[in-house]
Length: 239
Image (cartoon, rainbow, N blue to C red; front, side, top):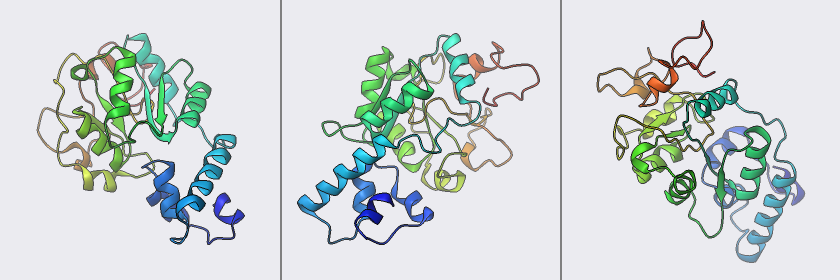
């Protein structure tokens, strides 16, 4: 809306912006600006947005409660993590360095297809030295559901992100598959860390099981049996 206001264009509502985000800066601005803004004019506006956002990327921004503690617990258990985002690469790295020091971060670049293409995920796995068969993807949007599927990774979809349970359930067509179900030690996610929804032994779709709060995939033993969380916390709840 800052860029729109600078140019005197109609502003967007919060609901509209929520629907626009998730596919990277280019798609966001394509959806936000008036349709007559094209070609070189659009590229100029896109550059303005990226520059402004990089300079103001930490306005009202903070990790979800419990995520820093969760990431610390995973690191202590030897589970590698990374951030994969459709935010501009410079912004992604800046935010990761601020909130998750030492965590590898991969954002959108012109030479790499954005999510839901799996390319950024594969780069993260290569950097971590983790095979896809030993990884799980954590995300909070429809784009993340598709990204996990395209990368062939099991998905832990969190319902407290910016999309919510209903949107995720609408896009979730079952397990993305691709990874074995046990012994997972790697973790690459669109969101750093993230809670998981507790999953039982049945094949019931965890996203539509409203009685369970979390999806918990093969990292369950690392999170619960090793007692990485403080006493008194419910099993599966983020740190």
